Image (cartoon, rainbow, N blue to C red; front, side, top):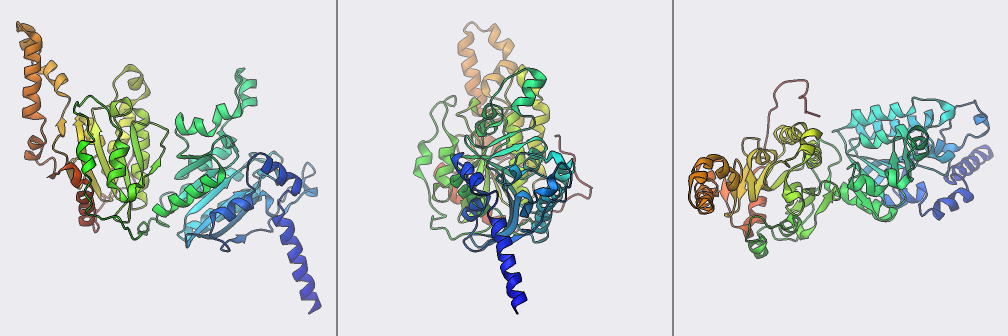
Length: 514
């Protein structure tokens, strides 16, 4: 019996050493930098008392460069599972107080194994990332193990990456392969090559935050989906995101009891559009008035702001929303907006979230720059994503729906199950001014009063070919609604589509124009 007690005491001491991470000095430095430790992050994310650590006693097997003299328990990453709001979630947290959180073979194996366990258990996988990069003493290969599991798990379980410190070199590709990326302002950074390498190779000087900080990836590159002012806010938003997602593709998103009346009509919507079709408004105001409790969780809010994407609930049920925003670029679709929307549409389709499209689009953004960037290729991604999606799809036209850009926002031909429209909607191949310029150019040029004839033709074209009644007569929209009825009409449409079934064509997979 004394032997058992001795072994229990030994285990206790080893566990305490493992939980101590890199020691008080390194932990104090972590706090000085405004960062939590790996274990503090886990405690803030998971429900209290639910965390079960696995592979705590793993150690690196490297005997070169004096590494055999420093073999900390856990090898710089904490892996395990617990619960978030009562649901099982797997997670790993890199510990930068232990060898900088560098990724060696055992470290990489632990993460890869954790993601595999999550996939097999049909539960989300969350990575809390803070690493100096690959461990040079052990050579390459560890990252590839992680990448392979990220790919194998894609579309099966939600994968979320929270960049809470450094993420550089090959390590950036694991987050890039996951579904969502969170960053923290001023403390997170992601880049393939750091400032020192860039200076050595190109001669350019740049600070880490300027190169790959949270603001850069949130507003310019589009790599980050969410940015928080600190780690606590960031982790709280990870929990909120999980509340919209199912645990795996075989399940439906979690439903909550809503106290917001599904029949609620919003009279404020009647006055939301400016009198002039050329004036702007913020589509996010429309969204806030129709979703449950005005709660809209926007994704990539700082990137391609002419396109709005995000999660909300309608009568307690999670939905994904894709909307044009006239406040930016007159809501024309550019390359970045198309990429942003297509990615979000496909993510919602992976995880069984119905899609709502709110349309006010004048077309694709014209110009040499966009053509040279490949707007043809990028815009095609949206078309592909909408047609590929098998979840319920409800489209509501708010103001303008012109040309091919309407198809990119999900019209009947591209697979919308239900198309609603406000009575002020204009639906056409292009705006009246452009159409008249082409159709009646000779007549206008020959007129004594060119401006008068032009205005008459514009009005005539608008009244004859651009009204929602004309579109409805061709069965290109299903229901013409009053603006204040938008919420109840969308909810009724989603309820009607709850049991939608779609059979896919037999093929290996389609070839989206990436």
